[in-house]
Length: 430
Ligand SMILES: [Fe+2]
Image (cartoon, rainbow, N blue to C red):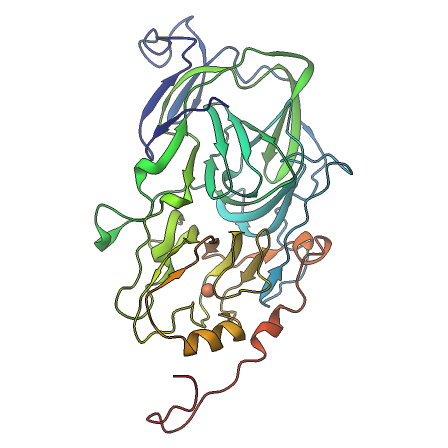
């Protein structure tokens, strides 16, 4: 597919399409008279064949299932779990990435640049002569089924399941798909994703900067007489404008505001090697900080293949209630705490102070298991979108998706008391 990348996270980069050698060299400063049209995404500069402003007016279009109305249905504090979200069949209805966006839950306010939304994308068709850009925030895209060939103004990225990409506010992109395709999106308003502070970990570990890949400049000088459609999400609503050329007409760019992708296989996992659990934040890939120190609008956290070696410890995730809202998804495999009904392409949401933890079956097995070193999560990749905001679920999430698992609470019902007042003679496992 010919896509190439520059490694690194947040670096100042310069890239020019090889068909225009020296394009950046001939530009002696950012704004040169008569050399090129440019557009600025502070702090990136893009040099293009025609400026983005050459388009007909934006008009409101069908919203589909995109929403930022967090009051569509009454709040629900229950543990929620979804069966795999159903992908429409191409033979029945052609759906592309934008028309296949479904908002599942979210919180906060777009106009004040504070909040997040979680969307599910379900599509079967390439976008063709349509592109999308988001005026409201950044998209962290997690493909679960089917690869995405993403054309951006900065170049092309191929993103496969077990990779993620971030496309930041304002960047235009168009997605080709190759089969019935599904994935998850974490949208954050007004902030950008960063690598977490490593603190005592020091210089190396978790997601290493060099494993993030930025596309190189690529352009097409393509006239589209029938009209190219630019779709914009602006203040939560969708708008479309027609123009006569492809928007991917950037011959060179420089700056550090770029899209990027990352392969989750490259995550350097740190874990307990003595006893107990590290806080799950040790698995944070990227974080979008809030204005309150130490509190994130959203963290992207993964549970990758690793060794479990902790002694005298219940090794699966423990039962807890906490202040965060935790949305979990599964890219592939079997999540250790819920072997049965938490399936790839589905999800779960445990809201602020709502109790959750492993199902009864997992508890029984792990309570009795011999604590030898063991591989955990081989062939599996579960992830979490975690937020300090209290998220509301949309009407699609609770009702019209028809994927909500009404029996989720039953996975904890078989849990039995193992209590005995004499702690020297435990009656339960171990
Ligand atoms: Fe949790």
